[in-house]
Length: 294
Image (cartoon, rainbow, N blue to C red; front, side):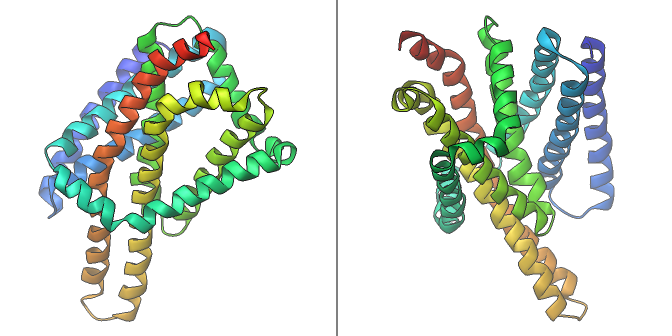
């Protein structure tokens, strides 16, 4: 992969956005903000496939360069989503949604904590399950050494927001399966953190200087994204059940009502993206300094 391909990929996303917006305005009677958010989700899916592709065909410094390039496009998509939501939401709305979705925030938090406990308690067994993910993290960490701070920041922000958009916007649209994957993802990420804590010589010190500074923003951001996804997935399931019960002409309206209710939580993605932006800036600047000191 080279710069020409990345430029082509970026141009393709821009053209698809323009054409998609024209089609949406002509064919769909719904707010344009829904299209913009969904398009950011679709672009994230495309870039995720691109990431998987380059990880198969490239290696070494070339791999990291290509990952940075794709994550740069992802960062631009995520910033675009942040700007879109900036003009759609207020802090009062965000606070209201946090209180409204309290139980959906508790669920992924609880699952994440279970993953950590399993990783700590069943180190050897869990390590075998997450070994590929840990090896990928270690390889990327090695490739990112001596790289400019902006590349590391772009890589981290793009990678984290990719995960957040997938679990908060894209996967929840798949009834049941999407929700199950979100739960599994939170359990897996918790297990990875737990395994790292179990195999390190000084886990508390590593947690204090290597995870806590950026983790206080990153972990809540991912948890809130998971909460958004779980609520939307639940509303879709509730809507399907309600639509089957109401077999009249209003069944589609009932389903649409539940889906709109679930999509209303997308406004929380504004907070998610801000938290992940702060986390990426801290992890690429402050965290390496602290790790170097200790």
